[in-house]
Image 1 (cartoon, rainbow, N blue to C red):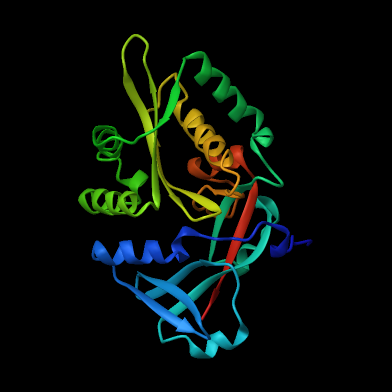
Image 2 (image 1 turned 90 degrees about the vertical axis):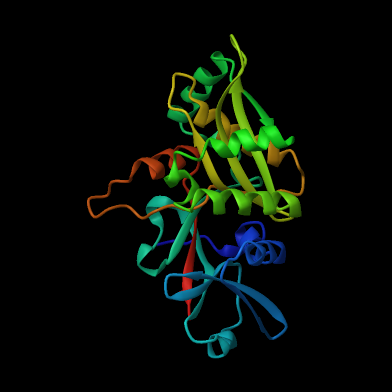
Length: 266
C-alpha cells in the first residue's frame, strides 16, 4: 500500500500543541502537564488513565525512553485517503483539507448540492464578535452535548471564553434574515499560526442545509488568510467491520477524504 509521506503536506501545527492552549486549559482547571525533552516542549492532557500529547508532528526516537510513566505521544505517522489508511497502526485520525492540495473544489457532489440549496435559502455567515453574538452561538450547544464533545456545558462555555480571550478561538455563525433574523448554527474554531481545527460545530436540521454552508464558510474564511494552510475537521472514526461509516464520518467524507493518522508513541 502506498502511503503518502508526512513531508508531502504543509507542516502540521495543531492548536493542541500550542502553549496558549495549554495555558488556557490550566486556567479552567484542566489536568494537563508540560514535559520538556531535549529542549522540545510537549503538552499532555489527561485522557482516561493516561496523559496524551495530541497531534505532535514528529519526534526523535530517544524520546521514548524519557517519557514519564502513563504518558504517550500521538505522532503524525501517515497521510492517505480514508479507504487506504492502515487503521491497525493508528491511535487517532482526522480528516483535513490543505490549501496546496485540496481546496473546496473537491467537495462531493452531494455536499455541493447541499450548498446550492443553502445559498438558495439565503443563508448567511459571519464571525461572532460581540458578547451577545458569542453568547447566542454558545447557547446553541446547550441542548446538544454530543456537539460539544459531551463536556459539561458550563465548562465548555468557560473554556471557549478563555480561548477567545487568548486569541486562540474564533466563533462562527450562520443565519437567515428572511423574513426575520434566525440563528441556524455555529462553530468554535481553534487556531494555530498556520492551521485551524473545527473543534465544535452544530446546526439546525432544516431545509436550509445550514451545516453545509457553515463548514464551507469556515473553510473559505480561513483559507483567505494566506498563513492558514490546513483546515482540520477534528477527528474521524475507522470504518466498522462491514465497511460502513457513521453519519458524522459520512458528512466529513463529503468534504474531504484525506486523512492524517497518528500513531501512539509510549
